[in-house]
Image 1: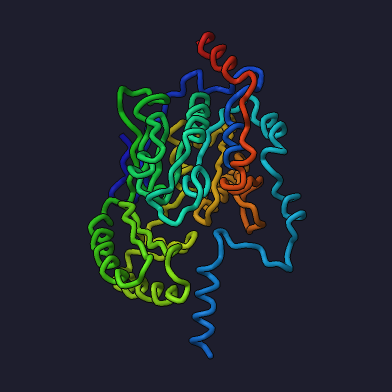
Image 2: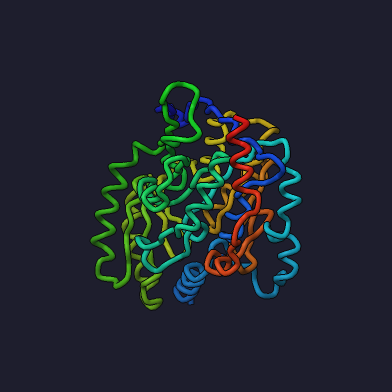
Amino acid sequence: MVIPDAKSGIPMSFSVAMPDSALFPPNGHFPWKRLLKKLGTNTNGARINALLDSMRASSPTRRPAEGEDHGSWILHHPSALNMFEEIMSASKGKQIVVFLDYDGTLSPIVEDPDRAFITNEMREAVRDVSKFFPTAIVSGRCRAKVHDFVKLSELYYAGSHGMDIKGPSKGHRQKKGNQTVLCQPAREFLPIIDEVYRALIEKVKHIPGAKVENNRFCLSVHYRCVDEKKWVELADEVKLVIKDYPQLRLNHGRKVFEIRPTIKWDKGNAVEFLLESLGYADSNDVLPVYIGDDRTDEDAFRVLRQRGRGLGILVSKVPKETNASYSLQEPTEASYALPKAFSGVEEAKKMSLLRH
């Protein structure tokens, strides 16, 4: 069991046993290229304009038109598919650990967040990857909701921007009995979050299209379906509620306001925690690969860049400021170029199973 220290908030962790089948598959044949292809998608007036610009912007921030053009950006953030062989060459002899965002990465961004379904094809791609590599879904959503979408019990799930982490119920397991990796550093904030959730429901119910989502350890106020003329009003209503709760902070996502506890914990911390739990805290024998599309994923990209070990892959069809090293197209765009199959993948699986 992994539980944060009550005073420091620093989680204590067990090491996780890695089955031999999770090691780098023989002959360079493995299913995660298939996954990459699946993924490859007056003062008051000034204040209002700045707020609208911020709310319109994709996450992370798009580069200005006068900045780098798309070709130059791709030079610095080449397609992970085009660089696939080089990435795999660099990973030989290392344990790959895969981290995946959900919305905008495994599923398309949709108007109704409750209908952001993963396709069966994508689910199978993730399942195949998890047979060879420890795999985690790192999302701003409630952990239970992401699990309901993905429906794969062999994965690690980090919900609420990494503030609710639980290990797999099967597949990659820990050495010590049936204990499960668990990290919930923001438990003390649950009563406040529930209170703010109820207040926000009341405050924004008169704004058509506004949706408040309770992600357990954080809240989301979606405005994708709100008329742009109402955006400033919605922002003001949200801020009016949050101002009475200094324990919470407000962030922007993709047409969503994120309300989170003020503790220093984000997707980057979740990646560090999971690597530590897997026994790779300061190891040179691991290659973490994080794939995401949102501003909140930048925290994870930044951690990998600071470690000097690991690959960040941004899912975007437009140039954006990012700490990622590689890029893929938006899921909706990449879906047209889905691979038909991987020759040798099934055979590699059988060989791996026979060997172990």
